Image (cartoon, rainbow, N blue to C red; front, side, top):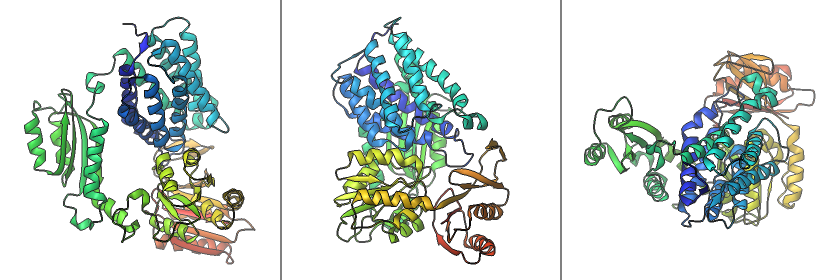
Length: 566
């Protein structure tokens, strides 16, 4: 059946379908990471960004598609995580601008809006690179412009746009040699293809009914968040938390191989009520959503499987979360939230210096160098635009400097600086080592413009090394890498690969040294240890006994050792 216009109902289905599609495929998108290390986060970032956009779209009461598009764009803007999430937000920012004032979208309206989204995304990137999501959006938009000349049936047009996006995605390895060498397509482009596939399926009616409407609205989100905050975010001793695991699942009723029971709400609810507290069970004819705090998440999931297959699962250790919060929180501030946890009791500074970091030790080290606020995050858990904006606006300062400490957070930080309530500049630090070096040039008496310039100039004097492990076999930069090898990465390039962690770290550092090297800093991560760090130190000292070698407990995830040389 031909569809010649998109109303608020169709648009809502398309947006929700896209959010669901990205959520289901986040891990697959993550696996397309070029480096074979456990830090792929493109899928997680895009899914989280789209979920934020969908939440804003759901909360918009207008029936105007133009208004709904604006809400979607605002949600994507504030929820954007990582460069991929920011670019996705820019696509729909351009889309929304082109639909302003439109009650419904004709075929030409949709095509024009999508094409404007492509243009906006290109403008948002300082140096657009082909072979990325930008190629996918541009080429699929071009096909849409051609297709609308042939038909006004939106099901045919959007299907053609989706197919063109997938075709463009398959060409990304030809445009970016590193993708071809590793054997993957561009991860951000893959995310956009999933969005367009969801649009195609939702508009054409191909989406399974169980995926069409979900008990996943803003009201339910608020209820779940409130339950979590009551149990976890208060100032209570972790030992007082009765049930360890916050467990959530979405069950497709009657689907799957393990179904042994016909769904009955009371039967389903009463069993779970015995498993813990903070229970929330919401269902319609096709799905049931569950939230419960329990000591037995496995039993909860098994119970769900008796009624249908598990579509989404989330399990969080609330005791561990509370321990982390209490380690950071001010003991006298009972109402502090995680986003405010680095706030000091002292008077607000003239300039807020805000850094993104993972690891308690790293946070303390950055504070000792002048950072006033630390946002918890980094590789694998990029903060959103909203997270950074909140930290800026709640700092109480008159101006702010933001150190993202990760290249994948640059665009998010830049976006936050644009919408912040106070003048804000971004010091584009890619690593913790660069942040430490940049902070040595920070002068509280200087303007944020002067500080940004001086700090960015000084951060180039440090070499940043990371030690982690490979999660798959691959070949990159002509180097054969095997699963579980330890990798030494210097300023984004793999320079060592070895089955022995200590040897990898030592060889990596030796490559980082030159005749001007003076200071070596070793940050021990969650999977590192003091003894190995001392071994690395001794080996480096044997090369040059005049080096000042310092060891700190960083506490960072993913990387057992972060090592800088300056």
